[in-house]
Image: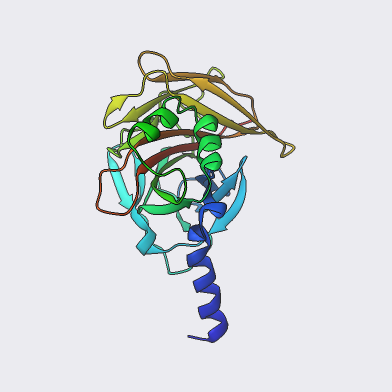
Length: 271
């Protein structure tokens, strides 16, 4: 392997794990280069990490992936990529029309909080109301502590007529789209259910990143109801990233006190 290629791959591999400053409160998502494609046509999607729906494009590294699948109806196909490839997904769409669900689950990574205030800002941003009290009650240090985090990402792509339904994938936390933005019957309100360990997350915060046709991003929040469902009015021609995070005490064998599980969903509303 040429030295320049090795340096490039090493940099791309290490970028997502460059420390707390690089990933603190950052979202990760799949961003299809086209959210609507013809059956059998080219399908490409970038793996992104950043803030406010703007971020770095990450390469494909199998060691960072627990699962990477394309699902349409009852058919699931694993995504195969080449080391260091950008975009992370580059393949052909299914030969039949329908709603294609891209599913990506990362391996667990860690970050270190060197300052208590950074954790407090994160907890406030993601609406973890009892995080401070729980942390203090557990007797954990207020600096130099670690968090383990995992990404659970989905994206909706319309293939051909785009008709079809999202599926429950069994990931530990996930969004499940109850409406299909590519369907002819779509009424302009996106309904999603947030699941954690196969159960609805009641009164959970959902952060909504809305990129309009001019590329301007606005950020709002809503909450799920007693069925874990959020209803989000959307506008034609706009792209959306939804984000919901679970915070829980870490129970594994690594040197950490907290664990976060990040659910994300992207889609675009046709014009």
